[in-house]
Length: 213
Image (cartoon, rainbow, N blue to C red; front, side):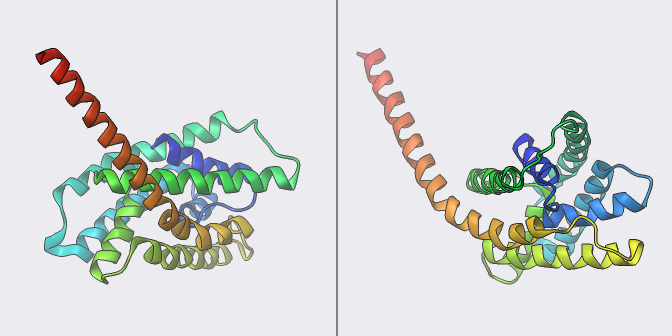
């Protein structure tokens, strides 16, 4: 969760636009008297409810772990924004590097999370639910859903402020690249974990034989 929080903060600090999924709560937080983290938590709870609607009887009870995760993630977003508020990048290349770093961190983190097959964050659970429902891959669904979030945030932004907020080139780059990056990173992460587990199991076996001998 901490890596995901850092990823979101990297977008904000880059000043190139916030990530697609976070763009909706970000724009809403500019209009209503609630913190960004509160709006993030509310969005994730809504996405959890949508998972139940989409999956129906296929909905797994362990997905309810996304509820406390959503609340903690919202708190972490507010805390991280406060801690990193003094950081700013003056050069465009520095901001662009921060953006790319955030995308890479997220892609690798998501790959570990999916392979571990544990409860995921609500936005990812929502996309996995859509992938299951329409028999597609997470990577493809994420690209489509990210563009949907961008469209919604743009619409809300113009409705509230008559101008664009939160969405910039970094948002569009993320919408295009994160799903693809996960598709690229996941096989490599799976290969790494398979080798690591094999080496760990082999080491345990050798240690057991030594102790028995």
